[in-house]
Image 1 (spheres, rainbow, N blue to C red):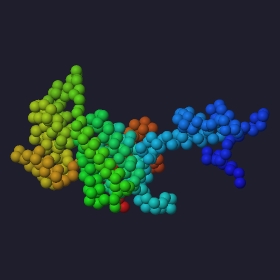
Image 2 (cartoon, one colour):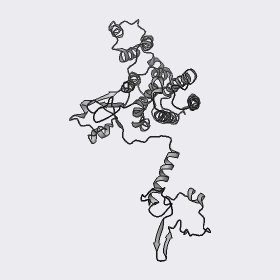
Image 3 (cartoon, rainbow, N blue to C red):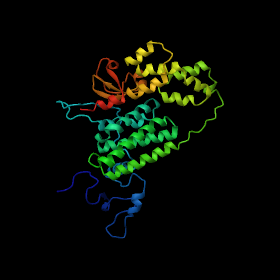
Image 4 (tube, helix red, strand yellow):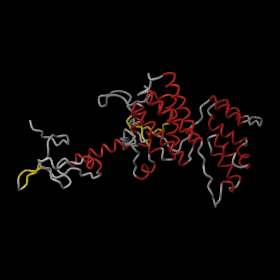
Length: 366
């Protein structure tokens, strides 16, 4: 039976009809005759970057295959998705079968682009830290590969931009502790893939930790106004805007003036009320207006027993009407009335709920 398809794997040669009869197609200007005098230089064909390797009907198929092979060999990420949203399905229906997993959400949502946005960087880093603590073994092999590829981009961004290295150091510390526990104590029974691959990943994490510990932030020469040139009341207001205690402590080590401002009692009282105002003990203690309370010590005491309030520049959003998890683009929402997902609600803004990193993980617990 003759082969009728246009597959590039079809057998035989391609022929063309000329005035002198049927001849084989021309490759790079040389005719393929029946004799053995003309040989094909395979190395020349493979090394040539010309996409039009063959002329004729197989040209387009061959070019497409070569592009696909080149992409697979030079790209670490296994999945490439343009959409920034995913339908969160927790059970089978007549329209949809199966359910959505944490690994699928990690592959589908565009976290690689999110870490390039300073408003979303802390959110992604915190999410990856929570996954490293408890959900790493629940990811599929493809999701674990994607996880480490994005993690490498996070580390490279910190090394290049020197942005929030403390958060990434905590992430790597939690991840290395978890991997060490899994590879030494638990072993291959819960890990996807060969255990030697995980040992190599553990060595890579140790290498990243050394690079971050040896990172030196260059001193920038500023010819204009600096932070120390601001009036004291403006410096104090900036300190009150910080929600992380370690940022306040590090800023207080810059100058003697900032050290005095960072140790102010009302500053730590405001920080305690911001994070632990829902705790009756903290609320009743603030109403007493006693000057004998060490609010800095109180903050670190409460931090050991209660979770702190998380604050991010931008987060993932969940549409209660569509059950879709997505990145919301405020510029598109303002200009084009596009909320980042195909919503069918009359008022999409009323159905949106910001999702914290812990809530993101809880969405995929069944």
